[in-house]
Each structure stands twice: as structure tokens, then as C-alpha cells.
Length: 161
Image 1: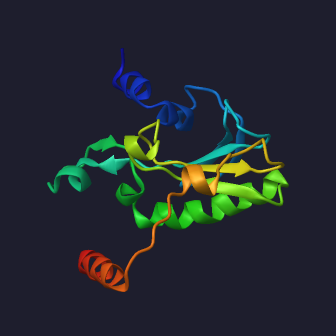
Image 2: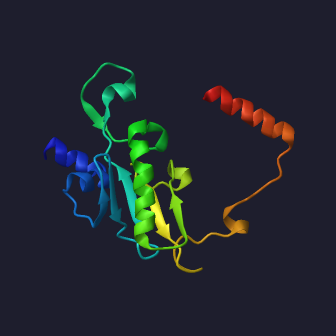
């Protein structure tokens, strides 16, 4: 097996970008690719992915020139790809023709990411039963936070910026 074939076997989305796995392309730029989800939750459900490959140096803080891998999560994605993917997501949302839709992006297994290649779902919401089905009680466990807690959280986040 060639190195390229082995890489494609590791990531479904990399294989789609390379064209070794066919897809129903909706939109494409130099940095992004949008294609129909093959298991849609509603008509027009589309995946928008970066065509990003990270050099080993970005992964290991060493001066290497080999291409190692794609961005697995949003925080690994270089800003130029993120700047491109935002308008691509918007164009795809408009192309669905849906007045209401969800944009979903998950990072990590606990956050329900099933493919380790950063991706955005554009999910049309044509009615209450199709598309992303959420309820406040089941999917959005709100709690009251004291101002002191919010201030402490704000300080921690600002320190990480």
C-alpha cells in the first residue's frame, strides 16, 4: 500500500479531498470543500471541511517540512483556513434554501466528534422532526451562575488568550 493510500485509510475526509473517495461536491475553494452528507438528517445536510494539512513542525514545535496530518479540531486549524471556511459555510447555508438551519461543529469524542478531521455541519431545519432535533430540557442543561463565578471564569479565559 502506498503512503497516500495509507493516509486516506486513516481519514475519510482526507480521501474525499484527494478524490480517492467520491463525494457530492456542493462548493469548493482553495482551502475548503463542501459536500453532501451521505447520512443526512435532512435534505441538504452538508459537511464543510478544510483542505488543511499541517506540517510536522506545527505539531511538534520542530523545524520539519514533512506534511503530517490534517487539523483534527478547530483549535488546530490555521487562521487562513478558518477565514475561508466561514464564508463557505454561509454560502452552503444559503444554497440549501432553508430559512432555518443549524451550523454544528464538534471537537473531541465527548463533544460528539466522530471523524477526527475538523468539520462543520450545515443542517437545514425544515420542520420539527427533521434536521438537528434538540430540546432545552434534554440538550441544554442551563444553570444559574453567580457573578463571582462568571468573573473567575472570565479571568481564566482572558489569561489563556
